[in-house]
Image (cartoon, rainbow, N blue to C red; front, side, top):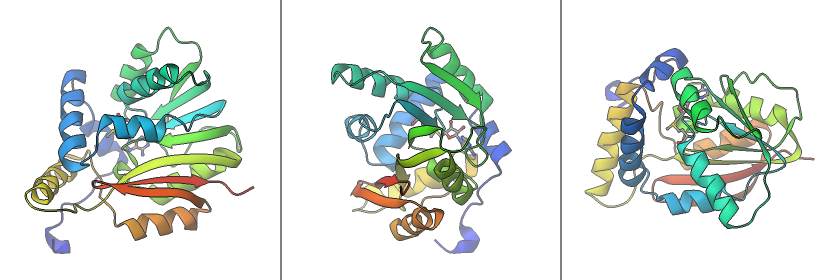
Length: 226
Ligand SMILES: C[S@@+](CC[C@H](N)C(=O)[O-])C[C@H]1O[C@@H](n2cnc3c(N)ncnc32)[C@H](O)[C@@H]1O
């Protein structure tokens, strides 16, 4: 698409406003986006994010916690240890949903925060996950830098990044339309080229320790160097 025709990404407050929707609509819409824009499945996401939970974990852009809850069920099923989790999100309506969902769980807390300005001390967390969200951030470089700051040396970040649509028609066309709609609405900032997001992660100071592409997603595991 020519740059002049590309819809414009929105500000963090416009994005937070765009995420204000009924929980049932958010979950239904999320299923369509996952299937037709990301060309991914829930199973892939559980296997990718589930293992990356150290004893102090930061869940960046946790949304209403729908995926986080499924990931934690997957971890229980795999008999993986319980850890302390802090979730942050910039959309207060999303965060309120997550707080309600996990109200009875003392090992999970939430804070309202921009991923690029985290209210935590340096080297506080062992791990961080950014699920389905990095491509929603208006300041992706700032977010990568600040997450690195709050990770302990050797701490790991798992993130999946939406790539520009690939693969055959009509799948590529459907994904393109969903992305254009998402950018206009404000729930997507931009998809990425794999090389671009990779370079940004390395420039922020991480070393990439694992990567794969599935569907239109770049799945990346990065580490703060020791
Ligand atoms: C597609 S949702 C993903 C939510 C959840 N991680 C999941 O997989 O279901 C993207 C989330 O990113 C959040 N977000 C967007 N910009 C943000 C920012 N600058 N800082 C923190 N969260 C942000 C939105 O509010 C929204 O909850």
